[in-house]
Image (cartoon, rainbow, N blue to C red; front, side, top):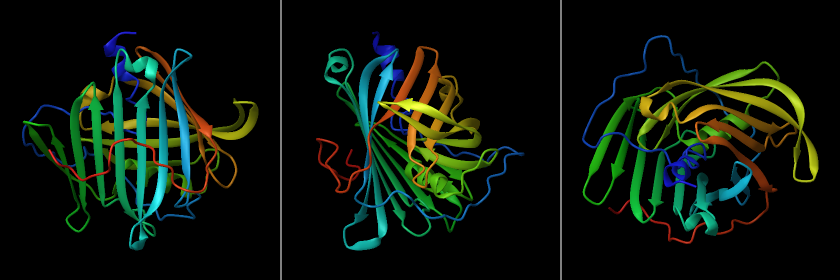
Length: 285
């Protein structure tokens, strides 16, 4: 498997491996006319502190990586949540291409309005760190990309911005019915993604040894701040459990190197398990 192909495996996984654009300090204009992003009030969140979801990532029917999403209370602040996600290639793939990615998102439990996102992306020993800071009073989002000898800063005007985990929790907290749609403004790494999610139908999917009742959800990318990332995923489908938990069961992404599956490997469990071998820390480069 070529290194260039392996690099693309991380693209649809939890927005952890999104690449930045040219280095420097830039400012971005507001969204183009015609794109309307509603504000959504959170409903009951079916994913709670102390729970985690584990996933296997496969490419052309070969297991290539593992991912984990966790939620916990911020120490000393019961109304503040820390969402965490990790992605790691497996030992066989590590021989050709080694990737470790970690995302941490701070958000209030009541509003799910993301406050800060931190991403550490280590690709074959090349470390890049990203910070996304949300200034809701000013209606602005600032993203910072740090490498050892470069810093890139980008600024966006945004009314209802979210990080990847905040957006996911908000989406699954909403009533889900066939025909419904919602549009979210998601920021990850240095880029902005306006994504519309449409619930296409209800169906049963085979996962592991079980047949599970699920909603088929079709995401459509309405806008991306860095068009270079647009071609990497041609289309995607998400299946969410049709029970009260609304658990993401499977993501199928078609890219120009083939089809990628991200499948739920383990049901939610109580107690947060350490998902990454590197110590947690703030941006330090």
